[in-house]
Image 1: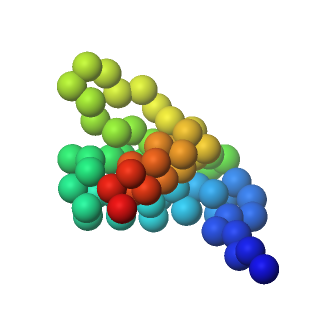
Image 2: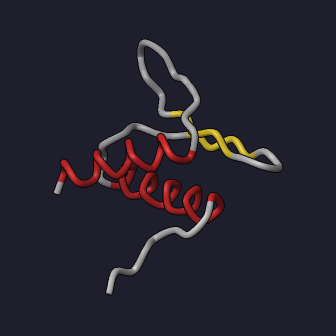
Image 3: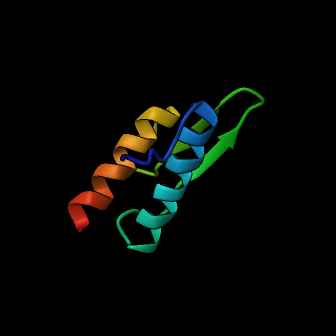
Length: 71
């Protein structure tokens, strides 16, 4: 039986944040910022060229790929 890491938008955002912290601790990203709004979150990964806000879905996929590629 598969255990899912998230079930709704809130738990998806929490999972993305945990993956971001893991990527940070592994040295895969220099830092990241989460902006909290009453109904959503935005994630920023500093970049020398640009830093566009990521949705929780985009952040989850980006952090997951970074961590999986490292392993």
